[in-house]
Length: 626
Image: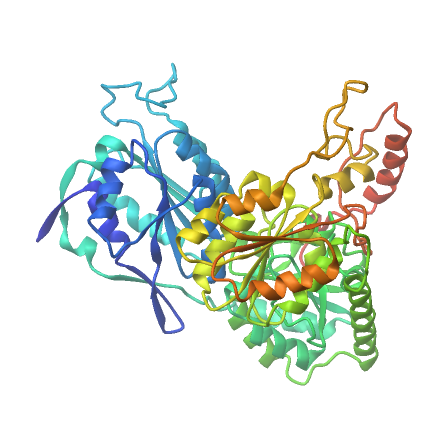
């Protein structure tokens, strides 16, 4: 057997650049390179290995958490068929990545994390940044990755790499099990040499399967659909990952079944598709939520049915409602006591389309769907056409970006009140034109994620919509976008605090307490003084971006139009009125309110809560089909 003598770090780098994926006959490299910040525990190991492998490109970020967000957004934009590795030093650099790991795993996105680790040989312990335990010497801060990783291992011997890497790749390329994969790398082991077999470094292609549905389950699902009077498809992110948009459009058109889109599934259909009722759930449209309430059959397609989608189990109120769960992951397919169709979304839709030949819902239901769509488009036009203030309303800003963007452009967001308004209002025209990280709704994802999306789709203009709260948490990747020549169009909405949580605070009777960026007043002891004078224009200019302030609607549209001609990342800062909110429609979210309180506002909110929570249903206790 021929061997190559490599250090662990060298072997890892060579292995990663020879991993490929193939789906539907298209073959591509799985790793686009590595992101990170060098520190002790990585620079003399994997860092030197990257230096010797310039064809596996290394990118410097400004925050390790942001590196994972970049990789996550890139992988999401590439439908999970490519990703990055992310590396760090052994201490705070590693734990900075934990939030990113959770973001990736919760959203079912593949990312490889390579944190440096403490010495395996232990004799020099405690090393700088080492977490000591009196109960075990086999623990480090990297153990914190275990609950937020789909696969975790620590490479304590060079030969362990041969066993661990194939398992890591199996999980990373699995449609059902993917998420963050963490390989902790003790710094002394990284530098150790071993005679690895040549076969380890040959090109390996990981085939991404399209699992077929069980015939009995498929036939039963088709029979349930034929028997339904008001079926509804809930389209989740699995539609996009499976590249099933065309199959969904065809099935919906032929059968007349309406579609509601989750945050992850938005852009599965173009907004003007006749069967697309738009956003569903807590941040949904009236038509989609009424259709959900009345549905006698819910086809959960590639969705994990989060509480925002199910309106905290209040969305589906028909006493005879049944569920069909179509999902590549068995765990998700069984939710809500569904008839589980464990299979790829695209091939299942194609099979159902054939099985439902000749079936179409009554014309009366079609007219109702059309009426809901027409009413919603009128409401969207009204919200886009507001001429509020100054300051502007948030819906006006979304409308301006929507008008300026082209079908191939992509909007990205993650946290605050923007995701809810974008879910309802954004008029997606092509698959993946809407990129929301809402599984973890991680503040700070937006700009880093925008960079990842731009790297995945350099031909598109990327519109990063971000509130001032998220911007202040992690704006530093503006520098990275300029470093890499990845132009972003950042729309920064200044509402002087946390608009989303401020609204939620008011709804539970807390009157917005602790959600505004204000000075503390000595008279009250609270943060209820004047607003803090944060100059976001100067902050963005200092990071190297082309920056302008828009104080009116006309100035905003002019700034958005001018962004196209800029050769580097641009930021337009626009003040918005956080109290000019887009309403909620036909939905509710379970946020428990104190059962007893001295505040009248809280007692009133509790009374409303008790009425709403009584509508929650326990779908899981029913047998499928009962």
